[in-house]
Length: 189
Image 1 (cartoon, rainbow, N blue to C red):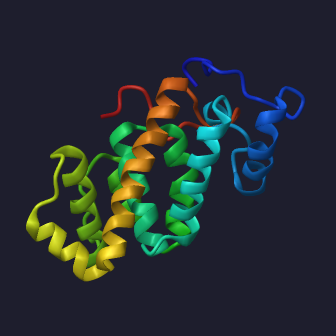
Image 2 (cartoon, rainbow, N blue to C red):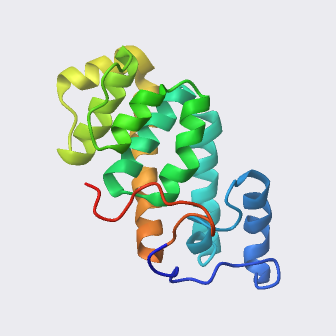
């Protein structure tokens, strides 16, 4: 990590009573403990709880298949060079069936080759939405055919939510857990 996080990482001993409930929930599901986005989220426990609940839906109850959902998160992580998002979600994406070459090429800031048709659609949808601030009729129709109306809404919300997560991480200068390697190196495009 190039700089220390702006917020000291909370521990069981430093939690305030109003942070404890959310921290307990985080510890049940987090591979990075109270670090990552949870560290700044705990500074605003009411907002943090609402965000945690939304993220729980988007991770485990969304209508978007896990492979595509994780791909969308990785697209945002790459756009933001979000160390924690990539660190946490690349292994999940791989386990959920996203091909290693797709992950590697995305990490190298390339449009992945060999994407499945639904992955190609998710890539276009997320990229258009975040880079052009709109989704073309053609891409929308493709996404709706693959995901349905609820899926298009869920994909849009996962995209925006993980932009918010990337913003929290960037603001807090939060990186991967101590002793772990950052996915994006200084000077990489």
